[in-house]
Length: 110
Image (tube, rainbow, N blue to C red):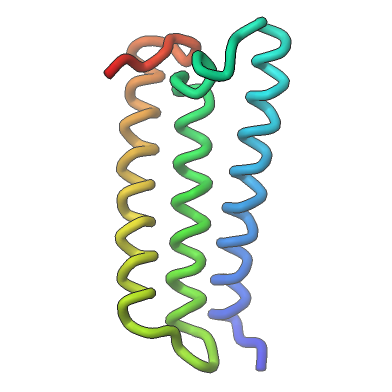
């Protein structure tokens, strides 16, 4: 049976997965235009902020899907996805703050 809760949970993880693929695809294009290496590209907030927020949606959607499914997932899986979601959300916020302070194209050191 489809409910509003399961529909929202499934939409969140699908949206997160699509966002992660879009972020990597966009950065592949930017890398080609700017003539960057992948090592440089993987250190820029221009990639890391949207990728982190997409993974936040993905893991949060999976946690909610585990809670609202007709056969609920084991409690440890829900906790694991919830912790990952919180960590990706904090990481995305930090990358966004770094991008606003130092520039979106500047690599993050350390």
